[in-house]
Amino acid sequence: MAILSLGVFGYWFGHFFVFLTIALSTVLLYWGVQLYRVERWLGDPESAPPEARGVWGRLFDHIYRLQRQSLETQDRLESSLEYLQDSLRSLRDVAIITDPRGNIVWANEAAKQLLNISIDNDVGRPLVNLIRSPSFSDYLSASDHTVPLRLPPTPEQERCFQVEVTAFGDGDRLIFVKDITEQYKLEMMRRDFVGNVSHELRTPLTVLKGYVENLQSLDPSITEKIERPLVQMDMQVVRMEVLLKDLLWLSRIESIEHSDKTSSVDMGELINELVGDLRAAWPDREISLSRSFDGLILGDPMELHSAVSNLIVNALKYSDSQSPVDVAWLCEDGQPTLHVSDQGEGIDPIHIPRLTERFYRVDKSRSQKTGGTGLGLAIVKHVALSHNAEIVIKSQVGAGSTFSLVFAPNVSTC
Ligand code: ADP
Figure (cartoon, protein in one colour):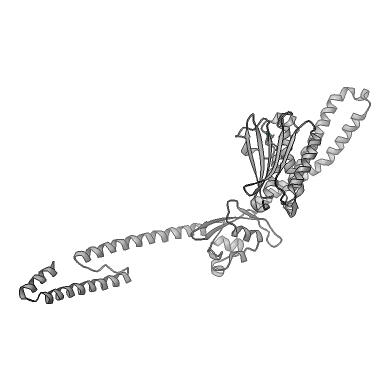
């Protein structure tokens, strides 16, 4: 408006362009001054916004509001971060933050007490140089951390730790390390107790078995009156023998010392031989076998034999004597897989999540009749766990069940 008025004024005096140039230069100068004030003000965000009228005044107000909002957000973020660090600092478990290269960025007080890692000395150092364990560095570099890692005690380090990793940001990681030594000791005590009791019971049981066999071999006229109790005793002794055998086997599988899975196992051949033995032991039953994968699995042949055997024997036990049992060893979606299917009684879905618990049975009386101990699937679960495999159970009541052992893709190339 001012430029227009000066233009008219100049025109009136016959110097239109001179007046217009003066007007435009004044405006440019004013804008230059305002820009300079903005620059100075933004250089010192704590200072008050410059005073101005018109469009510059409104612009300063707007920038001032945005500046306040951004400072408030920054304050809020800083206090949340402080709050988070405070809570992590006071945790009894170790909390460590690493950058995308695995170097320590932050660690809490517990890290100093449990792992001797401190912010003062160790920031910027690779975490794997301070927690020296091959399984820890493998776990850290893996992409899947859904299952926590357990670091059992070693000769150099007597505590047992559980590690959980959460990735965030651009490859940063929050690592929690929990001291589970007490829980580990209790587990070991339970395992040793079960193992020792089972072992100790074997001698009296052998003596008892001997007496029962001796009595049964006597002249029938002598044992006539105790014939039935003798048959019962013989049956119960056999049952106890099977139970003790399964308990001892389970504690052997659970034991850390036996977790060395270094043999290359030809699973196809192992299953083939096992099916042959079971066909001989159950001559009236039809057991079909299909093998389309001949890769090797890294593992313990005895444990794998016991897991597969438990699955096939269960399929035979819990299905009709006329119905077939189908066994398949194949490569499915890049994973070595065993399927054992029957057309038996099937299992109600409510029981499926608990089937692998020790002594869990769907129908107690039926299992006792079939001579089951309730430990078969617990054994299968442990073997699966230690061989990087998963048990998948699909079943329909009245139609049958399929129990599958699905090995992780890295166990073998298929
Ligand atoms: P058990 O020695 O009693 O067979 P397991 O641990 O092998 O113990 O099995 C647990 C329970 O799971 C069994 O008691 C049975 O009820 C059920 N079960 C296992 N396999 C099958 C199957 N193929 N069909 C139906 N039920 C099954």
